[in-house]
Length: 460
Ligand code: TYD
Ligand code: MG
Image (cartoon, rainbow, N blue to C red; front, side, top):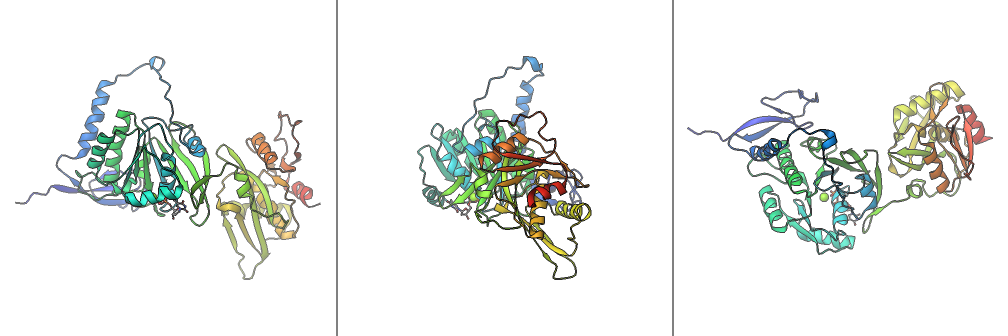
């Protein structure tokens, strides 16, 4: 009588919830069609190992009064890339586990490799399950950095990885990628929800026990399917997402979760021939290279995270060739643009119903800051009336449904940024500067209360 060594279990690829039977909808997170079957060993699984060690820790701990907890100021590990440090909230925290997620080919391996090759003070172990040591050497050559402290190993078995860790005793561990490594104790293949969860849990236990920081690289497919880092997001201390269109040169590193810092930080990189270059002055690249004045563009001052930047909004308004006018938007919320078009129709009297409207943000960025509204409608109107918005003028302001321009947050930072990039006129919402001293500013500030007022200022 053959006795099976494993049974089936279903895991949600979105949240990692385990269920004994298949379900169309995950009972935990409510997502449809996310349950995938996995073979789980009924014998001793590594789960017990990892949980066992965690239980041991919890037996030792006892509740303490907050006031009595001793804090030893953890010294953060400063990484070579200043942008990365900022996104991490001031460097890497010892003992933390950071997930760097992103679509394949976006540059995750390059970003991490480039940084660890410049670390002098610590031994780094880079485990690659995807590329051979030679490929990685070629990449290091391309980036143009060499390091004696960085060890590279191609390995996919978690147990072997721990053997390498014992041998090398690294001060920083990188796993590229978590989807390629597997714990032999589990039947399922690498990349499945069970494996990803299990491996991450064991690596986390390692990080917490030894105080060695662990950087995990994880893929997300466009659909976010099979064991996407969603499962991991609950386990790790920080999740950084590396995004950007792979046809565009710019990459944005965003913190989506960070137990040791703010999630509103953002770093901008440019993919060059020799690795990633930090874009420390985003205004330069986002403003395009147009020195000649054209209608249909306006420069807005938007805020992503804590960081203000100037961005060129381009619009094209033309008479609709077909019955239904086209509305096409890249980088901005299309519903919001439709709302702004309705405001223009109703409050300002521009007839846009029979026009095609195309809108584009330069540099391939996606911006959610409502303060970009004023620049968006200015670009649309500029194209519609075929009049130029001066290139040394920038705008910021949220547009309300009745055509009023509402104050925006962090106006001082926006002013400083605009001034830094050589803008001469800044159109801002009325009353936004209450209590702020602008006497030392060189930039000319014009306050507007309504959309019509902004147009009179721009085009007369
Ligand atoms: P990679 O880091 O392998 O992406 P990921 O690990 O996220 O899958 O790199 C992706 C792309 O970057 C690759 O198509 C080639 C390009 N690239 C450059 O343009 N310049 C460089 O110096 C390097 C190393 C890569
Ligand atoms: Mg890679």
